Image 1: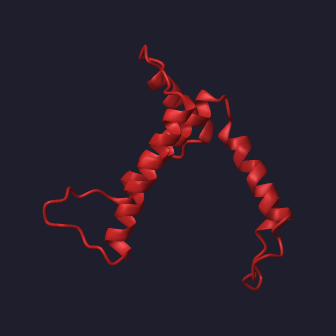
Image 2: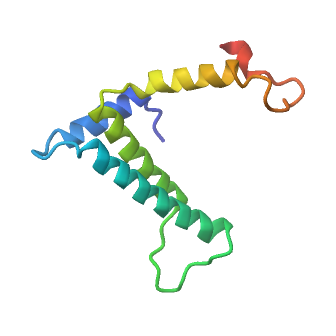
Length: 116
């Protein structure tokens, strides 16, 4: 098990993509790929947790594999647009910890915002 930072993951994906002349797909093509990967993840979730079991002839995939595919394409899109995903994550968490801080019912004694 590795403990890579998002910065390391973004660099690893960039190093991989940079070895090919074609480089990153266009943002529009990557949105199509994200949609495709999300569909594949949805299908796996439905097989494992929903009412639609797999056919005997269907290839065995895992939710983990599909999440990994979705993450890879998300990183590709971010890299192609020069977006630092760690910074994007920090902004989103700030939003949830401020705007939405009282939106949900807290578990007694738990306040994850104290460390921020």
